[in-house]
Length: 322
Image (cartoon, rainbow, N blue to C red; front, side, top):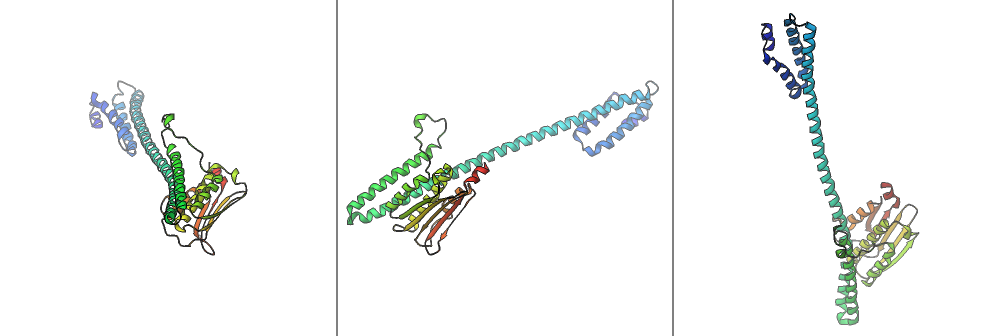
């Protein structure tokens, strides 16, 4: 319409809408249409310059009109690019918020799994000892009352120990803003030096445990000592549950230059019924702990009879990962 009216020599103030149309096309239209629009616009501008040549120089008219068209085109493209940048920033912010929520949920799930693993190790071991002692005490009540009384005392001691460990684990879950008076006393996590006390606990429940260490085990990092302690605790608990009292257990903790080997072998039955492969328990729980130190763990029938659990940890692996 613009070209038609100027071909007929008609000029209207509404012709400024042509520049608005070019601006709108640059802002909202398809970019591949811009070259064609610019070509048509240049032809229309030349036509206008020729028509007004009697009053204004052709070059001056072309300069003014082409500058106006270029400004309209540049303004549309600038606003379009700015809107695209803002949309990209909003999308990135939304993506970062989703990733933050996912990291928070993952951290929560990881912490829950860690706490569940600690609770399983503490409760499972102590309950296994208490059940064995209770059965022995019930059997000895009539035949040897003194032995039954001793079993009850040991059950009480084991229960108090378990309660203390549970309070320690649950205490670290309290909010940091809790009043100091409400925070329970915290004690260090178990280490390899505590394995002897652990063995004494299962000995009174009926297991015959032979424990030995090789190398400088006390010089190891506290984290790897806790992992080794929990592996021994889980292995002894399963021996007590599945093999029963009277089973002989050979326990070895061997510290070498680049690895720590924990080996627990008993002379009980090779077949072990029970939920050894449930998620978060048994062998799976051991593997999760050992994986932190780039090691591996195996459990199964031993050569010559019995059951053996062997875990290999590499103390330098976690330091390297950090």
